[in-house]
Structures are given as C-alpha cells and as structure tokens.
Image 1 (cartoon, rainbow, N blue to C red):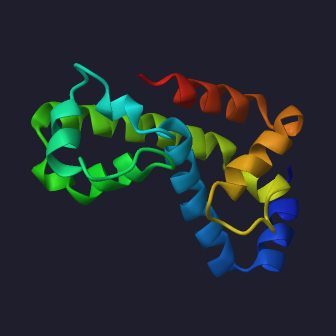
Image 2 (cartoon, one colour):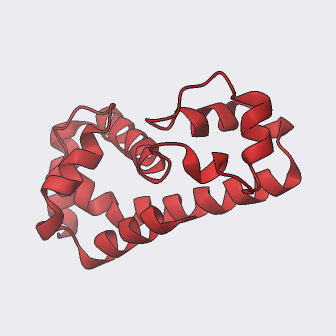
Length: 142
C-alpha cells in the first residue's frame, strides 16, 4: 500500500476514528492471545497466584482475566509482571505488523467485541506475510 493510499484512507476515516481503530485493534490482539485467560491462570504459570488473588471472581474468556490483571498491574508479583510484559511485547509487535492491514481491510469495521480480529481473519489470505506471522506468534505465546 502506497503512502498516498494510506493518506486517502486516513482522510476518509478521520484521524480520531483511525486512532480508535488502532487502539481497539491492540485490545483485540490482546484478546486473541488471552481469549480464555488460561495463559495466565494455568497451574504453575507465573501469574496463577495473582489470578487467584485478584481475579478469582472474574469469568474467563474474552480477555477478562487479562483486563483484571492489567487493572491490578502495580500489585502483581514480579514474576507475573515479567510474564505480562513479555506477552504485551509480543502483542505490540503483532499489532505493529498488522497496522497497515487493519487500515487497508478493516477501516470501516466498528471496534470492540473482536470485530477487527474477525475482519483480519476474514481477510487472512490477503494479509501481509508479516502480519500473518506475527499473529501466529502471538497465538503461540505460552
């Protein structure tokens, strides 16, 4: 995608809307990695104790455990903070790799409830190799 094509899309969508798409897309990728919350809650994982301590009343799924941990980030154990930071870094790389694809294939998709991620999945065959690889890496984070 050329720079002028990107600029035309950004003008159509509007800067505020695009910023919202970008932010929510990151949230969608976080949800992708932590759909059930088990990445942090399983057995001997570094965050299992923190999940039990801060998020025991949170229903797993749709990134709710991750959101709970993020809410309590300053109170997490050092091991959990390290794990959480590592997961966030993988997700940021995936998001950065997919930013152009989101702009190109999903600019009109309303953010929230995994709609941007669904759009990326629907356009999987058209996504850049870098985007596909990074989403795959993000899904394998364990």
